[in-house]
Length: 288
Image (tube, rainbow, N blue to C red):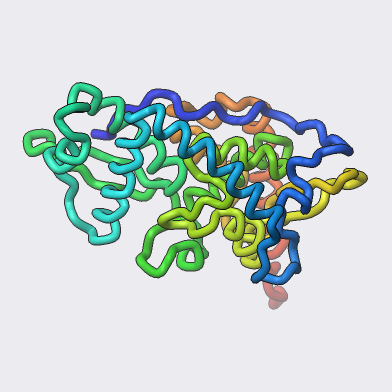
């Protein structure tokens, strides 16, 4: 039995977004790491921008103790996943503390939602009598090994979420749009993450170097701003339909609910099938 979730953060509006020529929020002056730049240096502007983006997380956590407790559950769940140990409800309640016990369903919902969207892991109740849970991966990419940290914790959920945002935005999304959505999941530029390390580096450098994402300047933008597209490896290892299925699962709906994206995904599947058929070798010479 899966833990029932209420709607997650709203998906970005469907369709292409307007690309403004003036878009300072995502310019290099705000600390954007451009493709091909040296991996090392962080400018003072980047540190300032990172601190500014990290600040809402700290402020919202202080204001909302339920979000703070949900974050504590996420850390605990990741540790259990890493150790491949069963998850007992009693242990979860202990972390939540008696003071917030009446809010446990809401805290668990928030933690479960984040596990699905960020890590692609679904929290399922495997034993109703003992209230034991298990984390099950909701997705798999052929190149997943390169998308796990040294402890085997997955990054593919975050990648699928980013690919989904790009798809929903008309196959290209500005850096501002990506961070706006990731901030709702508790992932902030400049704020080191347990799994992802420094998220800005992961997204603008690591995933670009692995060719899962393409990161480029928006044409004619002044000052320069940047956008994300699917990289060649994303097109090879997954598809628009698979990404749409992932988004549908997370939102407790079906792919066809996203009507325009569903039509585009169907067309993509048809084109892939035709390409596979054309690549197959033809029949050998016929012997009379």
